[in-house]
Length: 81
Image 1 (cartoon, rainbow, N blue to C red):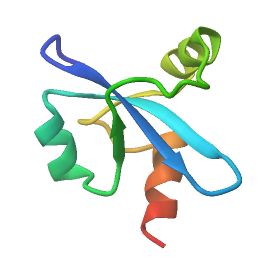
Image 2 (cartoon, rainbow, N blue to C red):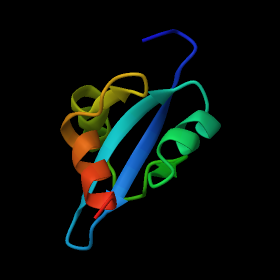
Image 3 (cartoon, one colour):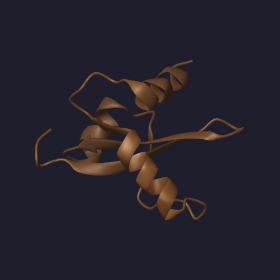
Image 4 (tube, rainbow, N blue to C red):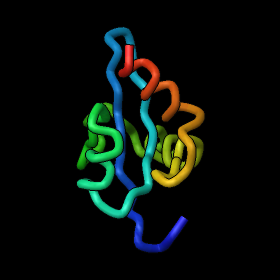
């Protein structure tokens, strides 16, 4: 990870729930170019408490330069269906 990357909150609502993660990228444009199917949230939704947000940032934080894994891989796989 390099210092020039920012954190972007990513959400995927699949109807009965949702998946959330944080993706580190140099810009929103870079993120959209690599993963156009992802939905970027500039603010956490109203239902997302500080505790939930902190858990997402701690447990589901990924770098755009790494191979997708964990929640990010699940989001991408479901979007490709």
